[in-house]
Image (cartoon, rainbow, N blue to C red; front, side, top):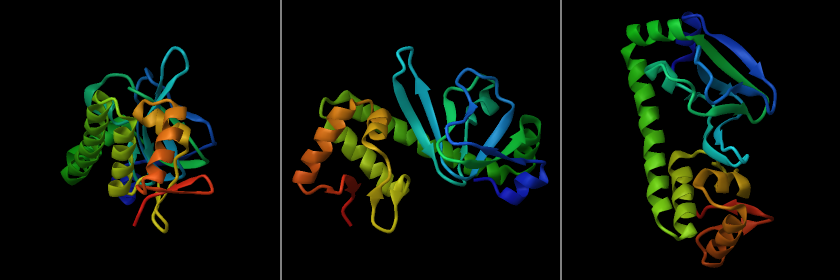
Length: 199
């Protein structure tokens, strides 16, 4: 994440979004750099039939929607505030100035891009296989290693079955069957409908 004090120094403002509010849509022009302060943001694509592919759930402190700041193309996905969220917003011009004058911040952004790219490679690799267990296992491994969408106190996955399905390109019914199978095999624990990773 870019240092919040640095963002404010370069003129960032804090913007609040309501639950379900769209921050920007796929295809929109980019005018700002965004970084999540509090809350939850979903970065997603929809097809013409209303099907959803969740690209990422943004963690507090992470930026999102940065690609157009580097390639001048429109947003590649839609960002939606999942809960009431607080976001730093910095104009594109000021962002360019900040990066030019603070190259260490660019390196941190590059590390975030690489993490996301590795996740996409992992999911695409698993999509080549026919076994849904491999996709679910890979997603759970990524969540465990990155501590994203995971309650650190008890290793509970905070994603719904539908959200899991939308992240790895499966039907929700397939995810339900798969996590039951993994539970029976002792790979995960399901308690009161919640999924827990082993210690």
